[in-house]
Length: 219
Image 1 (tube, rainbow, N blue to C red):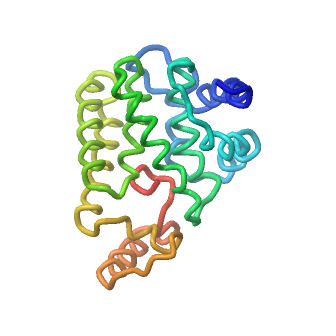
Image 2 (cartoon, rainbow, N blue to C red; image 1 turned 45 degrees about the vertical axis):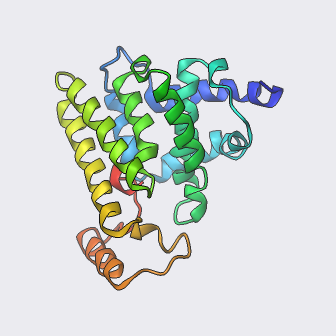
């Protein structure tokens, strides 16, 4: 581990505390945090920008040896690469620039044994696959989230079911279009007529946030 990477470890620990709070057990849902995750907030964006923007810029450039990180640092690294760019770069293709790195790290952590992580942490290991425009990744995301929902049946069943439904919506969009139409503008892509109709219908259903907001299926 380089000295620069070592310097990021306290920040990763801080990210875990900020994002998950204090988890009381493997099936705990931090109710004081869950609204922050998927509700667009200028205050949340500002906090992440003030405290973590430097880490978002630095972390993708390193070849991380995950075995050198604690469990909390590992999941925090995924949050840093997958979630925080969406706060910092709304409406820009830069919001998705670290997705592949986040997905690779999440995949390695899952392969190393996802049961080391709390159920809600496992959801954030699945989300990088939900963010992918690859159908195989979408299938994997739904499979992972379905397993989490089963395990969360006695702890947070409603929230887990909502999350699973959102994962399925994501997969259905990729099955239909092969990509997320609401990313087209940010990525400089031309929408097809069918995609444009989809975007207009989405805007009509949610006029205050017609494209990518802070809902689980819009991240």
